[in-house]
Image 1 (cartoon, rainbow, N blue to C red):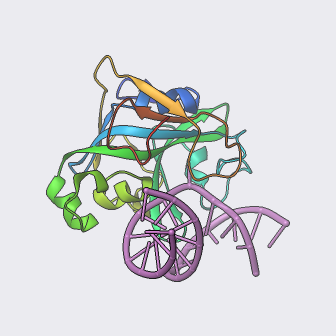
Image 2: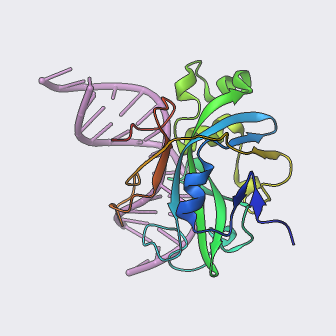
Length: 189
DNA sequence: CCGTAGATCCGCT
DNA sequence: GCGGATCTACGGC
């Protein structure tokens, strides 16, 4: 069985702790990516989570091994990337919502069709398009290529607030961001 | 600047 | 059938 610890984070921990620790972690996909500046936590007792009603064909990866990817189709158009956690057998995960672009900027610009750096990865659908992540990565390990994770530097300052774009459990403060980052999808208040 | 519509997959009623 | 962990283009102020 593979390790549940990656980039200095134990993915067996509750998803909101993992989401907070993921801020500042570098994620690359085929050598293209950057620093995570925005995340959201979801877990099995959370009405807003895909895993709330148990496993389905779409969400089965959320019930699989931790430190793996859960990728789903959003609004029939976009791909969204989650890092799977595990709490007591409930499906749980962290939605990666925004990156600060660091490597592979030319490829990101080509895939996104814009040169504006802030528009490359400032949203869950944008960053999967910029990195080339699709359904093909659903259920795959984050510990092996083409994924590559690197630990966050010390002294990261994290802010939090309510999650975005949901209608259930709207006051749970499980959205996390890098303080002062201009690469988040929406400002924190 | 703001609000809204449209694209169109998948799970639930 | 409908709503959604979204994004973009477009129209109005």
